[in-house]
Amino acid sequence: ERLGRRWIMADLGRFAIHTTRKRMIGLQRKLHEEGKPYRAFDVYNLGRYERQWWQKERLRGADEEHRKVVLGFYRAEVLQNSSSPLIHGRKGSALCHVDSIDGFFTRDELRAVAEAAKEAGARELHCLAWEFEMDLRLVCLEIEHAHDIRIKLVPIPREIMEKNRTSPPPFLEVAVLEAEPVYKTANGTKVVDIKLTKFVPSLAEIPSKELASLKERAIKSGFDFIDFWAVDFDYQDGQPFEHHWQTYRTRKDRSLPTVSDSEFDKYPKEGKYTACVKVVDIFGCDTSITVEIKY
Image 1 (cartoon, one colour):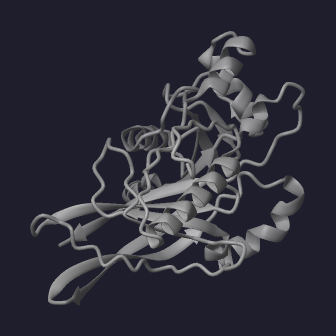
Image 2 (cartoon, helix red, strand yellow):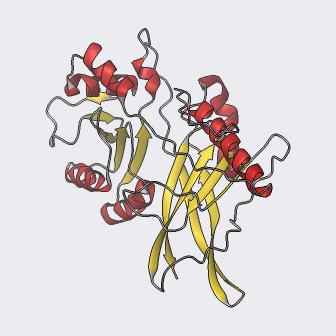
């Protein structure tokens, strides 16, 4: 990039990609300060190739076998005669749903599964999936209140795909991220910023030995686990995330603001817009939510 050459970089490690992103942004800022041109770059996730290989080679392509393996590691009972095809297991008094290996667990699926669990008389529901739709934790609160049922969203840990794995890896709930808009006036114009109000990391990538010491700190001081966060003030569903503003920790400066200072005013007219907030924690895992903007 310093030489002005075209380039492509690939890595399997989340944190390697995240570190490179921070360095690239640092280079952009340096070039901007020097009055020199700089270019944008994109970060892509190439898909579910690891899981697809696991399903084909180890599970012979069977989705039922996939659910059986996941429930086994989760220490849950497989239900042979379930009252609903959406309910696959039981752990204690909680019913369990395991999403498909290529699935992306959505709010519509969550509502359907919660309805099935309620009809089965459950007071607690565990939804296990490889990927979850953005803002799903917020939808959970609405469904929990409507159906009087406790819902856990649990990412399936990739460690279950290890060839000789016999002991269960930690199954931890998704991260919790909350934010709100901040409105003020600058030079007679209404401007918008975003304030982070809550963050609890999932700790899904943490070695088992370190979990106990980090759990309490994660709840009490969740912001300490944020390494980078960015805002797309005019997010369009289905479109790439635009970094209108971002901040991150560096080796020299470990501080991190929890309120943006963009003073964004680029909305074309008054009305409702959607901002997207993306947080990357110190383990390289990203969490995103949307925030309604009334401009």
